[in-house]
Image (cartoon, rainbow, N blue to C red):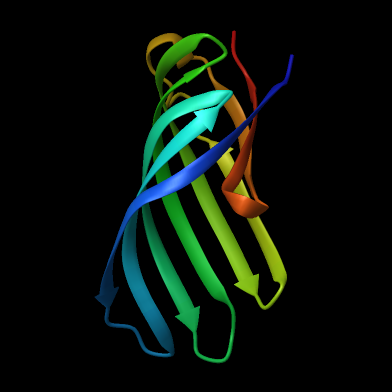
Length: 126
């Protein structure tokens, strides 16, 4: 059965390291976040971000959650990808199958970032 957890998050820190790239601005970025709500805990995101000259912004990232969810604790990995151009946005946030630990070992599903730094996770646990 698919469950849904909604949380708010704050960005506790952000570090960006520029990288050489022709045709845009490329950086490796790390965020640290704190989540409150149905999913409570912290995460670290490692992402590669690209602002294409005259084009979209693109990023791919890996986020490791250490959290409590549905009365269970553990960790899991979420894979991100997104493209933004003006108001047009498209992305996906998928829990990496087999990445869960502790009481979240069987987690699978997907996430979505909403306006105002809200986060929704649709997931299943055995």
